[in-house]
Amino acid sequence: RNEMRSLMVWLAVAIALQLLAGSLSADVKEYRVGIWYPTTKEGVMSLYKPVFQDYLTRVVGPILNVKFTVIVVDLEADLTAEKLIESNQIDFFYSMAGRMACVEVEYDWIVIASARARALGKEVGAQGTIIYSHKSNTDITSIKDFKGKRIGLAHMLSASFYLSKQVLQEQGVELFRDAAEVVFYGNDYGSQLQDVLGDKIDVGFTASTVLYQRYADSIPQLNFHATLTNATFEDEIYPFPTSTPLTPYFSLAASPNVPAAVKREVQRALRVLDANSPEAKAGSLSNFTTPASQFDVRASMEKANLFGAQGGGHCFSPFDDLRDLISCPDGYVVDSEKGLERRCAANNLACPKGFPCYCSPCIRTMSVEVYPSEVVLGLASTLFALNLAVVVFWAFGIELGGCCGRPVRAIRQHVEAAAA
Image (cartoon, rainbow, N blue to C red; front, side, top):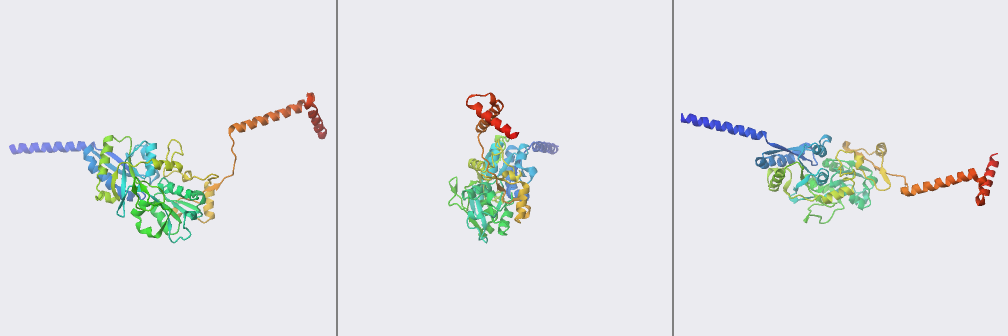
């Protein structure tokens, strides 16, 4: 009888624990992490699901009764970071420095951790941008030779675009005026590299760290242009070639709606990530550090008219009209869509693999002098007064005396005689 009673108690306790576990699991709070990286959706999941979904759920989940789910963003027009942020469908966002600068200002998100990457056995907390061409292309020896060439761009909101564009300007080359063709590769850095190697385009802009992480085998076939010597970021020398100043590597930002306790535990978990763990190795990560400043990134984006140009701190989405992202030098404007199509066809320049492209999109505009409104109004008033005076003298010249009456009367008589 005692054994039966003990068994009944044990069963009651087991059932209670199961009910309690079911109740707790039903109350688990889900946090969704939006992630962008220059690869396919499947590639993003294989690289970062282990860290931002599996690892965070395993480490932070038991502490706060939460779980994390990875959402791939900015690869489809309906799943941009902007749309998901505005509809409260993501709580965290992991992406490049340009995107971090945008969400900080436009949506009041907070960068809570910055990643350190691993590439060829080296650890880096920065991202450089390299301007490159194929070694077989002997027509290109310097940036000045880019005029009349086909140039491939990376993501329009990446440092690979806007910082490289500034490097060209410093060498007297205006990207959208002087290039024969500009091809927009978006997230597909691999296709850009293959098209340079296949001589379908002449020049490419890409992220140095990503190049050495994913395409190191192709590097011996490339020439690098305008490389900097001993480029540093936060007192650390960058180990790879770069043509531009450095920016932070990828970072993680959190929505203002995420509780402070959740942000804190996520930060702690990422900082103690073991560089030799399967999760870190999957994403070519070393660890995470305190947030890197995005101030210089934001200033560079403003200079390139990629941020703030729309007013109110608006950032361009990767799926905005590409023509809106083209900035022309003084004396030039962006040609019409039909004009751009005609120019590409006339020069037998096709867009590689269907990627959007434009052929010398900046065209010269007519020179028009613009005067202040006060000057225009003053001139108009003066002309009106002179015209009124002529009418008065013409109509009433006979009655006027002194120095003016006779000349006006004589002129009027002469005109009337000629008319007769």
